[in-house]
Each structure stands twice: as structure tokens, then as C-alpha cells.
Length: 198
Image 1: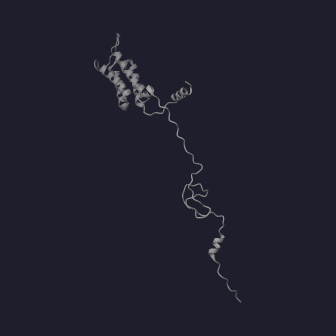
Image 2: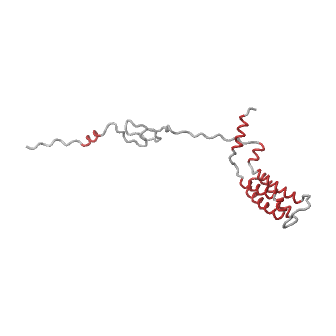
Image 3: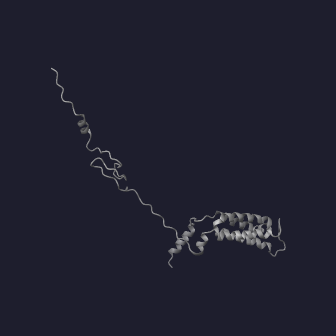
């Protein structure tokens, strides 16, 4: 006699029962540790909404701005002062050698008016570098060309002294940039001055 088959097992009930109770349910937008910044809602009772900021996040502190110098030091720091001053001194020295009370004055090349115009142009460029620093690149290049021209027109560039001063000054003015970070030595000196009691 053949055995009668029993009722078919319910497959949906078996799969539900086979799943462990402690398995975390899938959530949308929320990491497993619950520290995310998403706003998704969990699909099970154990998952909440993650809207908080992580505990490892720190706020970066902005450094304090350096004190801006006032008076002549502040005015000097906003322009290529030393480069312009050297160019002015170079032009003045070359002009002085043109009328110096010497028994022997060397003149090479063109004589006369050019020997005075080129050093005067150097002085003018140096003053413009100091008082009108917006066009410092043009003035520094013009000062360098005028300085090289004094080699031919004005006593070998004022006996090499004015030539060297003019080239150094025009190079300093050409390389100067506005809003440069202040040097450590200047900052250390100002900090020491503020630390000492009045």
C-alpha cells in the first residue's frame, strides 16, 4: 500500500524562518556604524536617520593676520623702494662724474647732451619706481637699458660705480612683488618689540 503524500511545505515561511534575527536590515544612505551624514530612513526598527556630523571632523583654525606696519615703514613696504633708491643714486653718481673737478675725464662715444640725458633718465626712472610703482616693470626695464647706455655715453657708466648700482637697483625693482609675505627677521623683531614692556 503506497503512502499518501503529505501537504506541500510553505517555502515562504521557511525562508523567513531561516534568516537570523540579528542580521541587520538594509538601510538607505546610513552606514553600518550610524555616523554618516545622509538623511535616509532605515527599513528596520534598529536603524534610525543619520543626520549628525562625524566625531572625527575638526574645524581648521585660521591663523591670525600679521600686523601691518604704519608710517614710513608701511609706505616703503608697498613699493620697490630700495631698487628705486639705488637707481636714483646711480644716476646722480653718473651725473656727478660728468662735471667732477678731475684733470682727466674719460668719455667714450657720443659727447655732449647724451652724457647728461641718459643719467637724468635713470634718476627719473628711479623716482617713478618709488612714487608710481604700478608700472614698475616698465620703469625697471627702462632703467636697466639706460644704465647699460651710460657705458657708452657717460665715463664708462660713472667709472663702473653707477653702472653696478643701476643694474642692481633695476634688478631689485623688477623682481619686487606686491603683497609679499614678510620676512621672519622683521616678524621676530616686531614680536620682540611687542613683548617688551613700555
